[in-house]
Length: 156
Image (cartoon, rainbow, N blue to C red; front, side, top):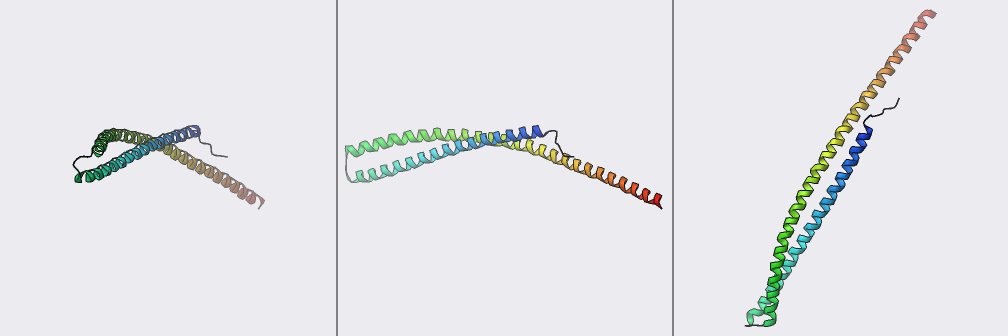
């Protein structure tokens, strides 16, 4: 006799749901990583612009006015204002992405628990099946031994 779990289709379905939830979580995590990398690039761009601004300011310290350098300073200043605004927007995007990742992770955890519960039920049913098969075999062996013993007594 072979063990057959009645809820095997349900278990396979739950595994599929868990796989889909894992894929959604991985996609959300990739999106968060992408947004974080973009933020890091923005921060690096801001630092580079500040360094350039500092170098220009050092050049201008010795001179009274250099219209070209002053124009560059103005451009850098406007660039820094724009990047600061973009950085704030990026922080909002990252926070939204984090919330999505947390939701997807909770959903994945829920699906994993559902699958594990059903797997535990399957294992319990399998253990019960094996126990019952062993019990039936023992009963059959006891009957064979009893019949053999009674046949040996009759022969004597």
